[in-house]
Amino acid sequence: MKKLKNKLTVGEIATYSLGSLGKEFSNNCISSFFLVYLCIYQGLNPIIMTVAFMLAKLWDAINDPILATLVNNTKGSKLGRYRQWILIGAVLNAATLVIMFLPLPESVSVAGKYAYYISAYIIWGMTFTVVDVPFWSMLPAIANTTEDRNRASSMARLIGGLGGFLVGSIGTSVILPTFSSMGMDRAYMIIGAVSGVIMLSFVSITVIFNKEKYPIPHTNVGLGSIFEMFKTNDQLRAYAVTFLLFTTGTTIALNQMLYLYIYCYEDSANLLSSKYSYTLFWIIACTGQGIAMFFYNQLTKKIPREKMFAFSYRACIAGYAMMFVIFFFLKPGRYLLNAVLIALAGASLMLACGINNIGSTVMIADVVDYSEYKTGKRADSVIFSVQTLLQKFAGALAMFILGLGISAAKLPTITQIPITDAGGKFLENIDVYTAADGTYLINNEEIWQKVTAIPEYAQNARFVSEQLVSAQSLTVLRIFMFLIPIPLCIIALIYYKKKYTLVGKRYDEIKSEIDKRRKAQDEEDISAE
Image (spheres, rainbow, N blue to C red):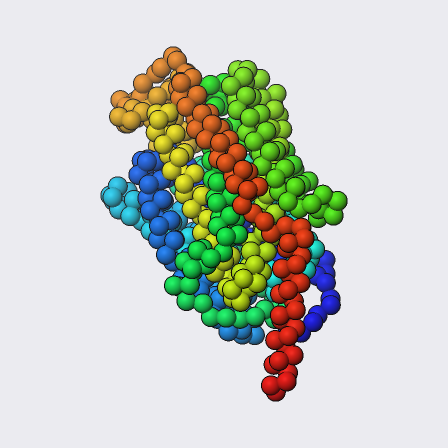
């Protein structure tokens, strides 16, 4: 192996990190908007959709290792071994994002809608794998030291977190309000299209400006050996369990925030103002994550990485507890105060997520080293695919739990009614809650007058004096949001401290032994020539 002494430059770290921003635009577009779009605006059953997403992950359990094996066994081209796959996956994934939010004709049956959107979700998962696995697998090929990996992964996670914030805030604060007059179907399609274009643009920057500088030992790996890796690599198992539990818990909490904001605004529980509070939450919460990621590399020079990682679990538990208490003591009508308190609690949670995300990325790179040390096979793409698979499975598991919560809470769906004048000229779209029998539930006099002025809607409308979303429904939402993530996080912390050992002196010895073996192999190859 050639011994290259040059470290990662600031430009290389920046262009690599922009690819992470692009990936997270795609990932967070789906996690933040897709289930909401299907259940609230397409009227599809949340239990059916979340079960379908879970089943889609069973397919991922098959195709993710297949795709990773293809990447792992691919010989380098002019773009290197990894970048060619990143580019192919980005093009396909961007196209899929548009397809997922396409409004279907009214003639399409309900069964047809289920088939279409479930199929689109499966295709999105496959194409995202083609981007994500080689993106992270490329890290050891551009950064050979733990310090450089920390620098690259921390910045990539920081910028990626910004992508998650931007897609949420741009979608809810800019795109939906601007294009809702065209219909929410089209507004959501624009979110998908914008996310796809941004994702492809930034991932292309990574492909163009990052070269794979460090030749990594290449060994073809068959699908059969993947199960053997889980059997023999105890550190891969330790990583997988902790990552799955932590990611499932945080995904439940963060994804359910949108539901709480949708169903807690003025016309119902009078707790939060939908006009600004959701964006304010993400601004403050992602600031906490940004601070953690920005200073992560400096902190690990003074605090052992394993202690930082364990701290992330404790901080996450504290963030859950804070948000749980705050959501049960919100004061009706105190919009700004409620929004700020929730956002500050979210900042604690996101700070913990930031530290954990970077630590997890470095951990999986170390697990790859451990695999080479123990078996002589790196199988980097295959092992990195475990992270992608776990992330998607955690997202699906979180969606399933959210679906149970939404159904248990008996939340009404939302129907968009186009309001016209006496001459039939379109004026605006109004969102109204819809009961299970299709009745429009309205408790606002102004909205009632507009809806009942149109005969075809008047016969299906019912004025109610009570809250449209009951206190019991909101309580169920809160319980599913917090009381499940907290124990998941506690179990993950205990398992990590007990099982994961690639830290400190032990890892240094393993890395030193790997370098010696590579050097000896290089000398043997030179002698053979």
